[in-house]
Image (cartoon, rainbow, N blue to C red; front, side):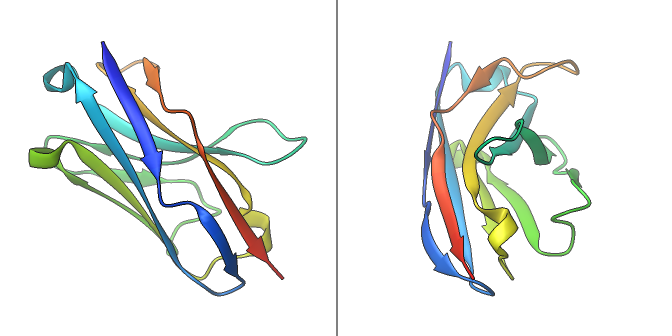
Length: 118
């Protein structure tokens, strides 16, 4: 089993920055890919970005490309989501997720709220 705990959410003005962290514990050696998702009120959860732990390749949703950056500290079993140039439409609960293979995500964190004021 793997446990994921997000932190770093909060309230920020348009154009501001936040950095989210996701600390993994448990059988972390089994993890292949870490991802970030978000869910705004009344909307479906959407993919934000992901990173492969070995090699560090990343993918991003078009809506955040160029503004958000995912990085990982494998020694600390932590993945980060650096969010710059935040917009009100980025307001959502952000979730960290982990996958042990090439398929879907197996583990999810509890989420952290990000609110961007206009």
